[in-house]
Image 1 (cartoon, rainbow, N blue to C red):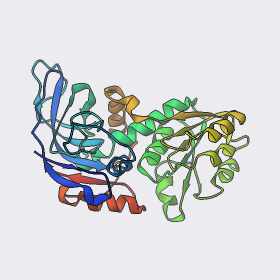
Image 2: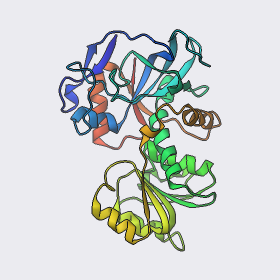
Image 3: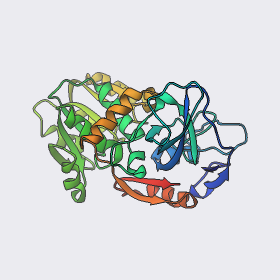
Image 4: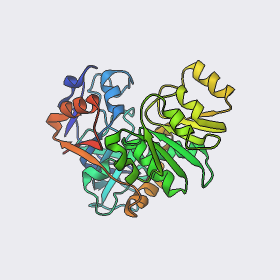
Length: 319
């Protein structure tokens, strides 16, 4: 089979189409004929070596955390609700020996795979698993009660957008940041109020509340400056970086704010969580936004566009 891999870390140019053995489903597993794989910031960190992973010895490293396609093989003795021909989606952990989702076929435990949202294209379905699960995990970690006020940074992005929509579906009041040209889009996702993004955003969030927001989902990785927007006893969920700095942790503790890490791989194999996202998408509560699609041979171009910023929606590789 073809896959997209790298033999050395570096810029987008290190990505190449490589040949790998076609995998087969074993007991408890299903095989997906991948039709779409989303390009995420995590993939660029793997490619650059910022997030080093070990796969099989000297074989190419295969990035990719999201796939969508069809079931074309079910392992012997596997008891599954899925059938050959079903359209499905899944999150892949690229640190596993077989690598990530940038491949024509991916074999996963049956519990990692759920039906794709009804009516969604393969490209649209592929944008949901990793980004949706990250947002879902962030909100779960915050432990907000219904009617709480939540601020979301980076709301126009994939994780931020899902956080806005999931929080709205949960009955929270949502404040979100946006550039002027994105304000209408963020409002359409369900934000009750939008404020200008950039320096001073914490003050603008704070101005919309009496004592500060109850929680923050910080997908823009702003970090410590956001603490002034949060009431004592509130919490901040970060997706990566930032809160690893001891000074940030000390300041948060001084202000009575709890820091929580939205670590998506805590939801590896959580069919219940991924199926919840599927149901919400079916109900029209989650928007599946595809910015552009690329052939495997143009994966490097997709990585360059993502690094350049300004992408609204997700870039997707189609097989």
